[in-house]
Image (cartoon, rainbow, N blue to C red):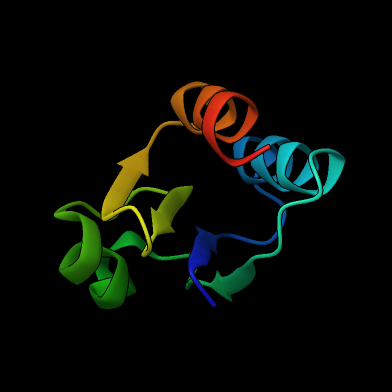
Length: 79
């Protein structure tokens, strides 16, 4: 899968990104993260920080955080 979303269950920012991906028909894989920041080693490894959401578009070589930027990217590039 070329689009991966790192998300936390119950996170409103992550839900916004999920909705944008679904609304735009983008196929993606969700990787659920731990609630504790200190346990989000995989997110830190791929993005350099532990916050979510984080979107990775492997085909384009893009890794990004912050829901507003991700939604804009989804709507302008992936849709």
